Image 1 (tube, rainbow, N blue to C red):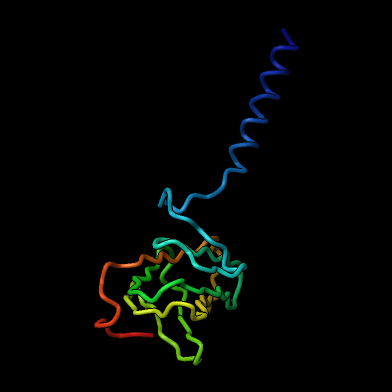
Image 2 (cartoon, helix red, strand yellow):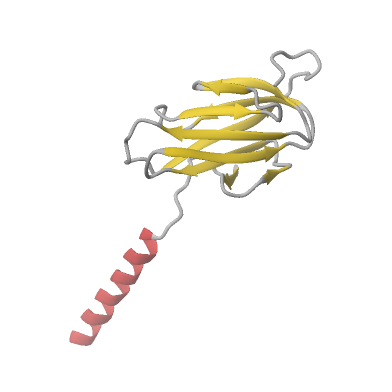
Length: 143
């Protein structure tokens, strides 16, 4: 009987350990999620960037889109972080809660998230990018 209890406790401990290692889901199943740490080249029409914060500072993602288009960029997490998109000319566009921009294909964009509040309870911060079915040629603002 003691053997069964020991095995049951061991299996329960393994199950709890495996469940605690589960990858955090963004709440958008099927949406490709990229780390800010690796260059994002020619992503799909809907994707997310994940930033991991534990202290003050900037985290920069480099994004290159395959074609010009109109994109909606939306914060999915804590609004206390600041988010800026920079183009190759180093012009900056601040993303409030969500913004829509005309972005050029084959251009490098830096998407910078900054923790300036001093709060360290952040874990994962997500930005959602969605390519919209809007004519790029007639859309403003282009960036």
